[in-house]
Length: 135
Image 1: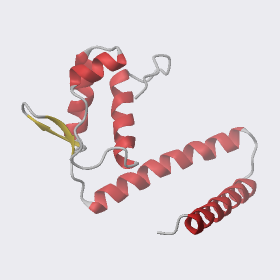
Image 2: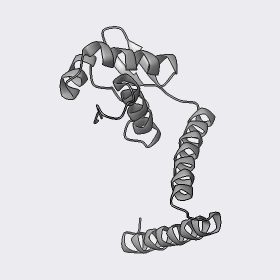
Image 3: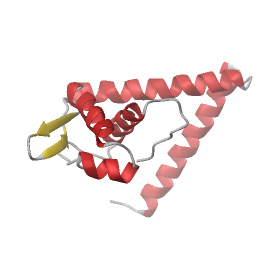
């Protein structure tokens, strides 16, 4: 996990966002134990209260479960909630891409063409990989 002190986003919100994304993208699975507050604070060189605040927010949002004396764990998510969270995250990322494309003067048509090209490249790459590593 990395913190950007120059981003303008409060550190605790950066922690919240990064842990949410880690859970959504599978770096953390349901039941995985998160680093203890003090350990993460030392790793990031920040105040433990900042980490504790991030963990409280994640607990309030149902992303993590806290077990007194046992630590903090990624909560089990209902499938429909997890899917919605993933789609919401993807929508935000796509909005940023669209905003960047508009700022660069890339038309909607060209952006769609680029997307289709990349999608086709990924599909071809995945097909090659599945032929190399059947299983």
